[in-house]
Length: 327
Image (cartoon, rainbow, N blue to C red):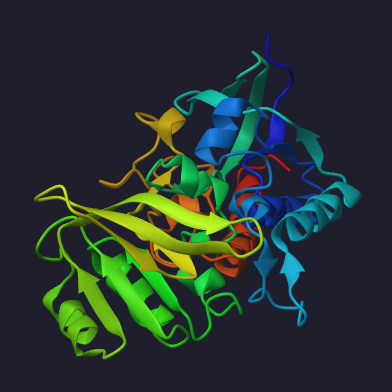
């Protein structure tokens, strides 16, 4: 049986989840965080506890760390700060919810049932990868899914890099990387881009950018000392292959929000992201359920913006609970 209702349950443990927990704990809401389970399935999906930053090496763009900080250390510090103020943590996934009843009902992978007056969903979104074994080997050693996060690192400066994709996000990544790299090679499986016309014009006008049409990456090349040194491309129209030398490969083939357990419970957009129902508020389609971080943000996807919306969600939850006379 479920225990007595929690004031607020936070699902997720990236920058949004821990920031929400810090604010909720300091507001005496006694938050309970489900940080995720440590399973092989979650490792493969990139959804282990501490979020995407736990899969990142150097973080140079998070305020307050002028020398940079390792992603896992930053997340461990955030977690410790939340726990210091009284946050309780369960290392498990929430796999089912019922937001039609009050208090809300949640069930974990290991079968624990919890009820809560308010819920903050901060489960994030995972980057889509090609699924190559070599890609996995060089992740964070030249393979990245975030140009804004990693593009300015010394590894990529004044050296060629590859961007995989053909939509607006791929073009944006390529143009951003062109500020740092000596050359940007865009690899696209078709003979034309899906990106908007204005974005394509900017891409084709940039002298640093080259597009490899009708190509797919079949192998990431490199070694333990240097990391990524190149990629092997295969044609999609014949059997020809070529090797492109580069210091890194950036994936821009979309993200998948971690919202499978919410289908039918909250309003999601066509890509599966949680819909915020009011501008500059973290409210969802169910009163008392709030969303923070990349699970509701397909645009910015930065640690600092996730943390900011985590703060917003905690404040929104606190005010809502107070209005309902629940705290």
